[in-house]
Length: 194
Image (tube, rainbow, N blue to C red):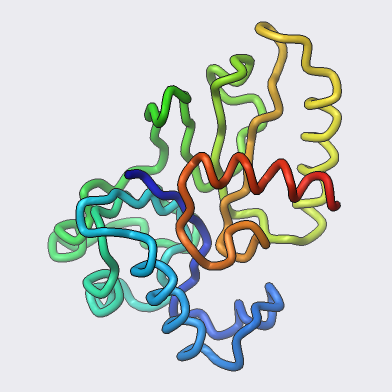
């Protein structure tokens, strides 16, 4: 089974304040992320991490990565290292800046950065999953753009608006890797409340 999540920021104390995360300190946040992850992900599953994974020196990543179940594919974000050591590379199935895959009959474009007009973005069964944009002003811009695109979608040949933020801090993600079906379903509910 495939799971998706972005912007975990493991080890990043200031992100608790910046995102208004519901944790008293970095140790509580790191523990919750590991527990949430392992409660969902089995050793044979694959988790696509869409960037900004761990906020500590790269040589210390193994401490956290080895505690997390599943095969891990890292889609590199702006706060991830630009180069990885061979030891860290062995912790992942793949490390790449961008990826396109199929999941449950859907074409997925995976990138840390939002791409509202992604390749295959006019097909109803295509989705762009991203992170990077926390619930701040830039997220509001994207939310408004997406609403306009969704309202004007006329079928193949026009953008479908199926780009979804899978940042850990999003209410429907709740610091837990989610399946594509869960993300699509929860995103629809979330859009109706905001």
